[in-house]
Image (tube, rainbow, N blue to C red; front, top):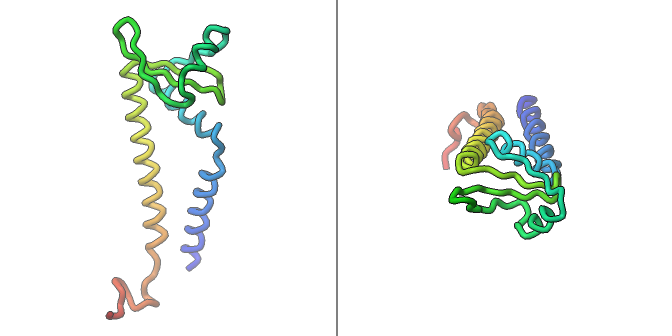
Length: 133
């Protein structure tokens, strides 16, 4: 019984920590993943860049073509007031890394849930459901 309480407390802390993450922290985490995938940081530090920057949808990837090459840009007006710019390879790696992270997070959550539900069914008549309907 003590194990269940400990597991529930740990799960509650994980949920609370995720809920306490503010939007800036979420964006910064996403930007760390972009940098790791090969995106380049370009500050909007001139009037011309700032004017161009405002035309893009905030916190959304836009596909741009320049000199026949495809690039992806991600404007961040919240944390850095900058663009993250990457080619198709960087974008594909970013998407793969995000998928892998989501899968790892789901596996960790499933493992916590499995631990939480692996309690002693003995007092209830055994597993599965020692009673009959």
